[in-house]
Picture 1 (tube, rainbow, N blue to C red):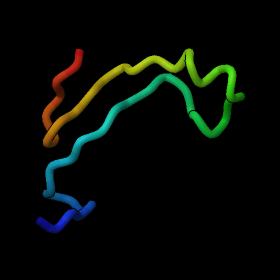
Picture 2: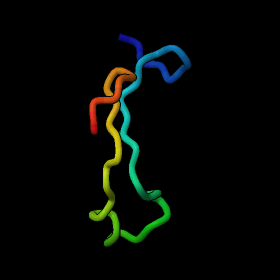
Picture 3: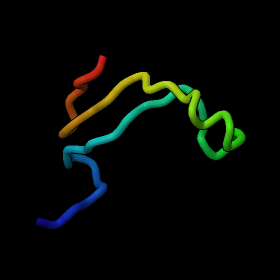
Picture 4: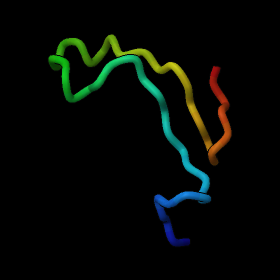
Length: 45
């Protein structure tokens, strides 16, 4: 199976409340998942 990141293709991803690249290592554990998408469909919340 070929994987692509292009318009029209389904995607699995999460939306989080903080930029993990802009916070300290200690703050990483406090990141909250706001939404989860599987195959382009929202499955959480």
